[in-house]
Image (tube, rainbow, N blue to C red; front, side, top):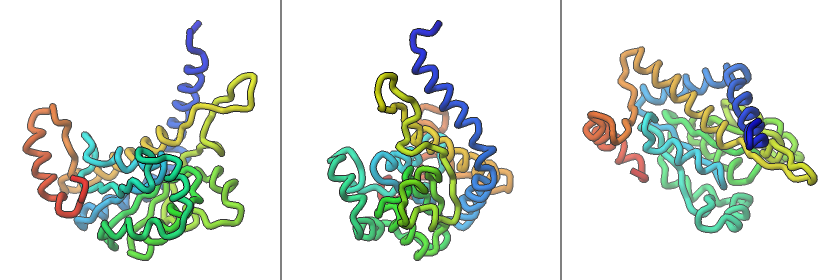
Length: 245
């Protein structure tokens, strides 16, 4: 018998959820891969934005070994957790926070904007989607349909605006495991599943690009042979448009 039965249950549940992603999101993953492929062929960019813990998805995509170099994180400490998580929770619910942040990123019709929000209803998230649409970008949401529908209470959701929805299937509140003897729940899943969904889209797009004769802009791990030269070429190509390189 395992000495960590609750950890085992959590991991088994998470594994099962990830295993169902392609079945539950097949059409959306295909559509998102289409959008990223088109963007790459047009020399566009894939921007990634989230607030609170969801901002980690932007960092996951950025300068990532095995990841696409055309990804640009949209980062501002106002909407992140490392310089004031409590304040950030207030800010992400305030109207007007996102617009000046997005001014730093020259988004256009050839680009994709991936917005990650589990609840999908915070003001900053919704306004980000509206800005992306207004600029002509293809907006992809990574969100929980069941959670956002419960949390909306008549408000506009990220899923109402996005062109493509990748549903992470997370329950309301995100945590999946009950704590015996209490009403508490533990074990969030939105980050793990969000990363899996996003990288699944990038994998599909990268292989399609390479198969069509277009070199996929993929970073190599710094310790791999030829990484220095390959990565330097990608950095030179994308640094003028990625303020975080």
